[in-house]
Length: 397
Image (tube, rainbow, N blue to C red; front, side, top):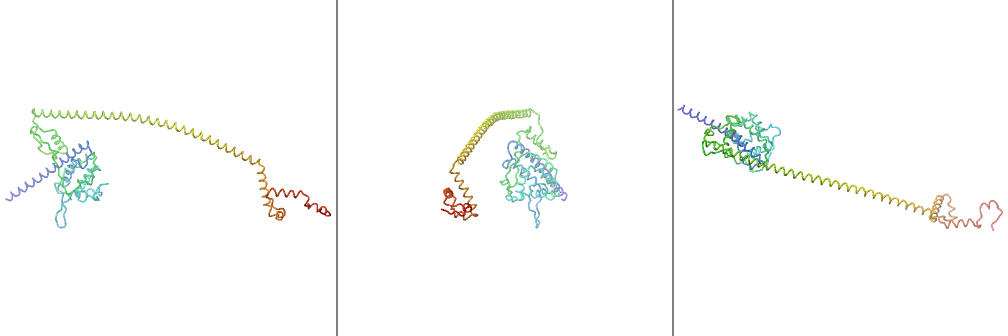
């Protein structure tokens, strides 16, 4: 009985380990397919939150980082659930110029799972998701502290994960960190339907399945799913199917060739139009330069004419001033006024020396008083002091 129980426990452990290995392989393989679909989608349009390929990739990456993640022990010994953001926040804290602090301080993101989803989007926009994953995996002590045995990040698949994510650096992502995709209340659900292909007959395998199998085996032999399909049966039906596929590829190539030729033709037409427009613009520039030159010459001629007129006006003004001065110099009344003023100034200067003379003779400021003085001087009514001194015996009449 004891041996039976031991055998059952061993078989149960083997089944658990085998299921864990299958789960790891499936997650890594599906992650590789999702990266390939993202790269193919980016060739036609920008990847944002509405792209189903990105939503599926984010769910797959969240499942990988949450695979066998340990819970957090409380004071009472209970284990509370934990998000992969708690591991990323500690393991990537030493990455230079990281976005960990900015995401930790985001106001509109409160839950730990929402912060982890925001970190995935910011790392993709920074083209540093592979760098963050590599830095976290190098911190083996922290990784062992957060994950149980059998986790993907503790196995050989972790190195493959960092290599796969390196191809996402060639894609330009555009995300909004305030959308519904950051809601931490919804779990991450993976859609496997885009990576599955069903055939009607078991004798043939489509080229898409072959591509999936080659992509699954490109990383390592351990990551390839076993027994994908039956072996090839080289019969007429298989040859016919192969010819059909080749014909479809040929038609697709022809359509792409026609599309590219039409695109080249349109570009040539646009180039010819731009060349003609460039010629017209150059001709307009030349005409404008000629007009500016003519206007400049006209303005210079006008300036010269104005200068000549100004010189003539100044010369006429000088001549009129000289003529007025000459008229003033030949005016006798003005000369008399000037002489009167001159005499007045002289008298005013000698006023302090002979004050009694002004009292006797009166004011000499006018020409009439000067004439009266001369008349009195010429008459014989007044005696000359010289005569009185020379002939004291003479008496006035």
